[in-house]
Length: 481
Image (cartoon, rainbow, N blue to C red; front, side, top):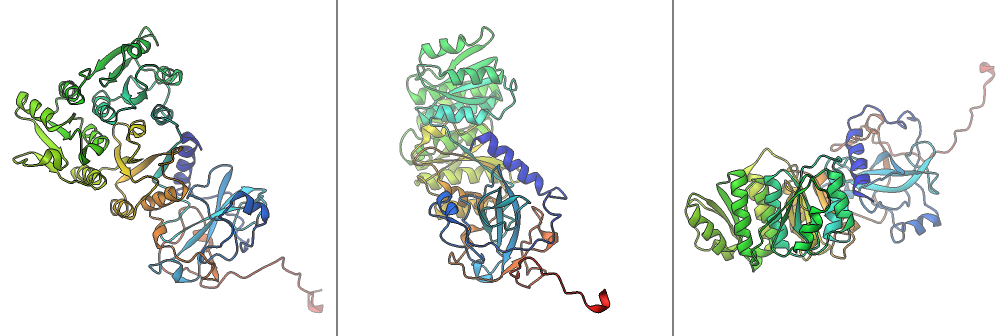
């Protein structure tokens, strides 16, 4: 599924929650139960079609995520008649994702469609995803970065910053540069310019390209200059030491933005793992990032009024005065502390986030754009600590980016958990995958539209859905003749 398709589908779902009508809502007299799917369902959803979910009256597969992409479309929902289906006793919703002429029961689907899979939630309407989780399926940092910018309008970007996809430190340093020039980040190999990357620079309409990092070759700079006679190409941070390069880049950012503060992480140790998060933190404030305590102190000697945010125990030890300290030795916890500090500093703002595998920081360089907060996760895991942290800060995130196509990336079940954490579907409260909890309760007509599902409290009708077939005509009495 491409990023653009997912963006379009999710936007449609969000807007649908605010429309007054769905084409299939007029069929208000239709009542049916989900019955067992055939063998074709089992083949289509291998490993998912063999069990019903708590409160479900038949066997249809669970959707792997909360997405219902075209050519599928949403039907309406029903409610589980047993409060034990949600661990907190809340009202469980089970909604149909439908597909035209699919070989399964009709369920609560638009005319001509049948149940493709079902989704369930313990709080919000699972058909409404206000916080998009966009999956970027590139196979390298460069491909991921092109996917990220491909949704932008052609000719809309004046400046492109080229980041080093083989060095997460250099990649992190590129973010404040892009923020300073209101540009975007694209990732390139060090010695050659991929044709797809050159084509994207042309499509975006860039008139200026800034290469950031010490390891890029003169050949790449020349190739960028050759894209078009009207493109200006510059190179920042050519010092072979990453700490020295960060000082050069910081001076440039301070000159471009007038920044009076900077952020510092260590060149090694736990805080170094948080470099990309620290770079996203600095970029949001349009301030520079430097690598190593010595680099920060060298800039402080030049500009004594600088305020420094020291990140991690390696660089923060002994810091006092007006400086900010974000301490910690666990890189995953430290990264969340960095993001929490940014959220606390702007309590009324919402932020896009990028979640990346902690062991793939180089690939993640292509995922993070200026204005986006970066958060590492364990390989293919949304561990309970991170999940609960996301839930605690729910409402502060307006979208999420993830990578796919890598072994370490979040796979379907983890994407499902992430979508739930950000949107309030409360999958962690779902209980019972063995079909218990019958009977189910028909969703009242007024609650069938997307975004109108009941979230709390008992349904307005407590009568279980009857098993119905075609009604037999009544015999006419003599008086009716």
